[in-house]
Length: 108
Image (cartoon, rainbow, N blue to C red; front, side, top):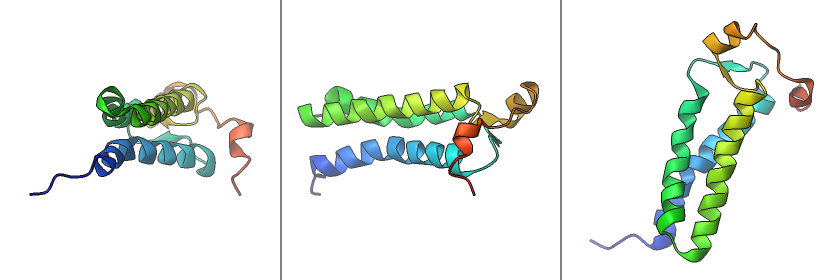
């Protein structure tokens, strides 16, 4: 069996972080509700494969992997901090806060 090229392996390791980051951005700025049915901090797992690539990848891929990992963790943390993405029970405990007005600029 032929080994996968390094670029394909790198893309597969980076993909979860990119997809989760895109979903968090979409959910935070395009969906009017700021609560979901599961704990958003569980999404932090997606940074794991790209952190792994950041540790063992080639020099150019290391920088990209670390940048994407930091971006993913930062987006999830900011979404939690600014009440953009909360678990339903936490949303109720915090008094059902609305999304900040600056987050609703792109909504119709």
